[in-house]
Image (tube, rainbow, N blue to C red):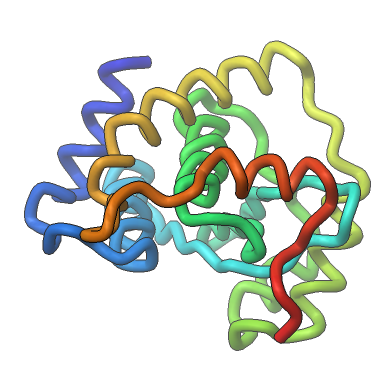
Length: 175
């Protein structure tokens, strides 16, 4: 698992990103690394998930992989979610496949159809316990190695407060 993490980091070339880096820049670089490793495009999208469902989702299409990450949480948590979904990829787990994924992958950010797709798939997500443990272990390893890049110049973000808010159902400030 460490070698797989090292490969993603090496291919992502995050050492060449500005310091500190914005979360979209870091996530984009990590997706480029996963794209190189998988030999197909890997993209991410930030979208609000319905309360009481998942906070991340990997949608596999014939042409690409789309990782959808909860928009209404802090960047550190988003990084962990993205890395967790990458864990499913590198460990050879099955992504969620369905006809609407190819269309949803091409929609502009915030498109209602993508939100509907996520609500449908997230509500039905039940992976095996072993697969979830493997993905979580990889996610923790990768996100820990990348987290320093997300530190702000003014100090650490309130990660604990953000996670407490998420556990209580706080989805961020309205629009």
